[in-house]
Length: 383
Image (tube, rainbow, N blue to C red; front, side):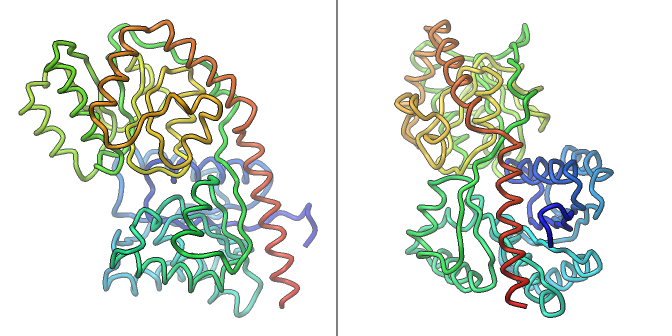
């Protein structure tokens, strides 16, 4: 296969939400624009109207379509039937490449790719996106997931990590990979570097993302309460949905913050950015979060935690990051930002200039295609 010949690429993922799906859609659209036939297979049980609309919008540009099947989040007896259905969806597409994303997508995509590869060369690639790496190595779940990760390396043509942090954690928890591995950081479109101005009624602080403790929403709410208790009440808007939403709403009511904290349904990131004068990313764990890249590119003042690949994004400005899970440190950073808005805007502009040189969708897509073609060639040579 020559480097000019179009590829048939299918992305397999369980959850069609958050940064992982943003990554897949961006990559799929860039690959389609380059002349490749691209498809997506994902779960039908996750997401709502926002995700449905996103998939419907991109599907006309996917020559191999978008297929949604029920895939449970955790290991379940239904996985056997789901695996058969994924195989049934992928088989007629005759992919050259299966790019599997996330823990469950990584299992399904690579197993089906190995099965299809019995009759024709099918290159298999895996991007963890955090996934199973969030588990502790000493936990029962961690030992199980890491053993599976280790076994699946034998049918993987390359690991594709979105950050050097993720690559390091993979080696620490799973072990040195038995297959090639590369780091390809997430990239943005040129238009995403246009600044977003806050709306007239914008809140002091914005949270945008999944509503779950892993993302530190509870820490953000604790910090807001600490500010209120000290007489420095701040307004906030929380955009997103997730498994812990009811708990967060109850906390806001019980803490007397209801008049100062609004919840909004998921919406496009740049639309959400206008709802806050600064954004808070209080995560306990991340890999290479799009929300940080997008918000910096849009020029938003930001408070973020020192986790995952966030220091790689901040680069020379990473001293400004705060420790995860520390409500007092977050409240102090929020109070400082609120008291010095001009300094916060200057810091935001410096970060925007910094990432403009490093995080490009075009570069991301090009590097991943090179990895695909190397894997395909090796697979054909083995055949």
